[in-house]
Length: 385
Image 1: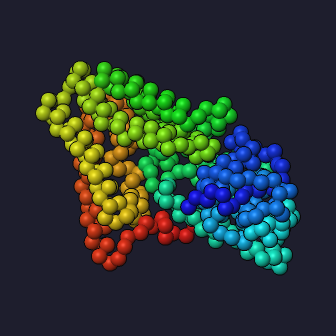
Image 2: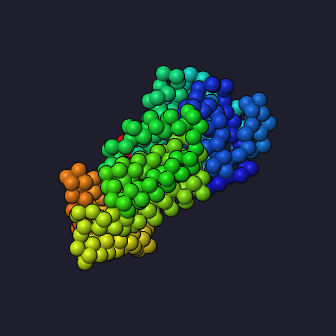
Image 3: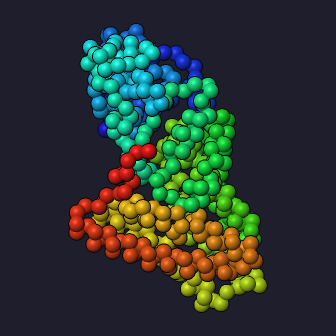
């Protein structure tokens, strides 16, 4: 829900703390602008405000679900996630002055909050982040110079999806965190990273086409790493855009079939050329499986209003190794290191066929289970950590 002129934002205090190399005050203003709260007033204008006011401490960082939920509540005093001290509030004209007093005080108790109801981030709602398909307790944190790196890590990890592949989940986070900080410090935009990712896509394609599989994999892995960095940079610095998101997802969706075809053509230029019929069948299975698996995912969303990867725990775990780009890249890399890039392509074809059958079985199980009632994600039902 967007809010245009009915709610004003007031930043309490003049803290100079920076997070992701930007002042927390500026981040708060941009974060609330994304949900439609664009009017900003100074502290001395609170008593003159004609409508509701959202008040936030200037040293605060709020999770995206918290920012989205605050405008939809009223007469509340939000406590931070660590010390249960006031960090934000949403009050009407009569309660804004009291909210400011409480935010600037040392603590809060039920009998000193007036008509404001004290709540935690979990009570505020938004624990299930639909866009990232995961459930976790949203944060509201006070930034200090001593805890900046720790809070940045918390914010960074909070941008990961609940269901993803094992490379993205286990290998990329730590190096991607430092590269994301480096980009933020230099003012490198997510779109710049995406463009570099696109260059790596083209380079990998050409190298595969020429039979330079090791170098092509190096370019391909660089692309997959940058694909992680641009998304994390966009979310942590609040610089995401519809155009950038479309560009990033467009590259991610289109490049994979071209890589496999280039790999097959590159094989035919060397000593490990496959029989023509075997090559055609392998590429056919990979490309058909790539398309059909996404068709099954679309059918799941259409029939069950649910992405199949987040239905049950086993589905989320299977998502880590299913025949998507990064797991397939692991197979290709392993066989290139073994000196058999031809077996790498065959292994991807076999694994793609196996995963298609397993995904089809998932869909059939979901269809049967729906007879007992609507399906829901286990991530949306689990208690926040």
